[in-house]
Image 1 (tube, one colour):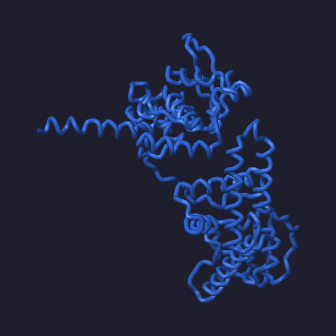
Image 2: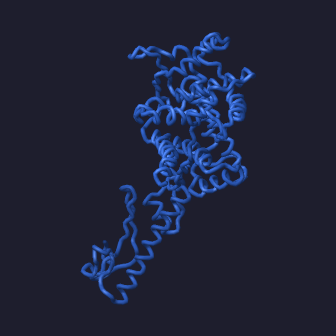
Image 3: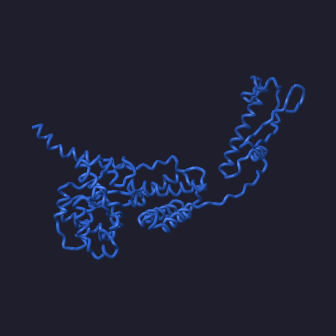
Amino acid sequence: MSRKRAGLHDIYLRITVNCEVSEMNTKRNCAPHMWDPRADRVAGKTDAAKSVNSYLEVLEKKIYEHRKTLVDTDQPVTALNIKLMLNGLPINQPIKKPKHMIMAIFRQHNDEIKALVGSEYSENTLERYEVSYRHTLNFLHHKYQVADMDINDLNYEFMAAYEFWLKTVRKCDHNSTMKYLANFKKIVIRCIKYGLLTRDPFVAFKLTKREVERFALTESEIERITNETFEIAGTAIVKDIFLFSCYTGLAYADVEKLRKTDIVIGNDGEQWLISRRQKTDITARIPLLPPALAIINKYTNHPRCIAKSMVLPVPSNQKVNEYLKIVANKCNITKTLTFHIARHTFATTVTLSNGVPIETVSKMLGHRNLKTTQHYAKILDKKIGDDMRGLREKYRS
């Protein structure tokens, strides 16, 4: 402080940003004994004190406004720049940051996955990200009329608009929408990990899936499919592959890549199936039940199995779905047959319903945690309720 006239000292403003300090004279003064250091204001209620304090409050408010302006315009937030703005002077020009475009980063991510297909990723994983890429690109065209966007422009509003577009324009159901948004968010998290973003712009956006009812085949439905014969060879093969999944719990992708070397003799002297799940990258160890072994033995000499050392001659996913419709129609199964239903059938009708502990079922399904397997236990509770309904009526009569 410097003495302006007897008994009065100048009031200085000190701005500190990240340990950098800049000072300026406020051109206001007061007597030292009238200064309140805790409030950083002039003590008392005189008109002079009120006038000085009012000016200091305006000055403080301007400091925060200038700081916000620097942040919003991507300028360096420094004590000197705030001081320059307070004095109406031009700020120090920043070094222009390079733009990082979200679709370019998305493309790079997908190209890296493509290069690792067969070693670390499956074709299905690549296709999942390619579909998400196309959806995101189409959304940018639809909403913003652009082909790419700076990652720093992403915010909560973007994610909310993307969700709305997927549900309305693309007609996706809620869980499919959440899946596509989760795929996109993985790209954003990648940007954060690479230091291109300082924060997650979607941190408040909740990616919550709705629980869907899971179906499984009953023992009588399994028996109906087992006993049915099909003249078309492709349909007969798909029927057997589907039943194999019902007795092993393997997903389509895991049955497709199954090789004869995946079948080994376990500690119990019986044949086991050891397969690394494509989806979770966790090894599933499954003791083979007699119906599953019978199906394996049936195709031991199939030309495709011999040529590629495959366990089963699995057709394309599209063909499998076509043949499963034929199987369902001929066997009078009203449920839509899928490999998801086959896994659910293994988890409930084949194992849990027959007293196999849920922890054991979880290991055989290749789940990462028990919580995932507990969904199947809910199906089992429903089945128990249905089975007990008749018994309740008997005791009521």
